[in-house]
Image (cartoon, rainbow, N blue to C red; front, side, top):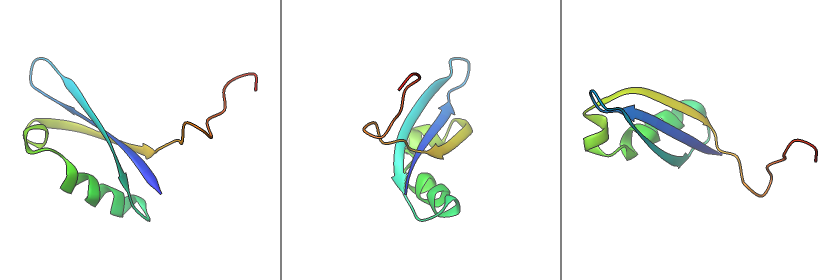
Length: 64
């Protein structure tokens, strides 16, 4: 399964780094996300969000 990871980082001016990892479960995805996080982002990270990544081809929109 693919997971989308969003990391908030930075001091006074916050920025966001978003990337995807593949894993069989949420705990495995968190471990993979930690390994894949760039060191400069990890040094200033203060919030991490993980969600199942949606395939754009399978995405439904309101009214469909």
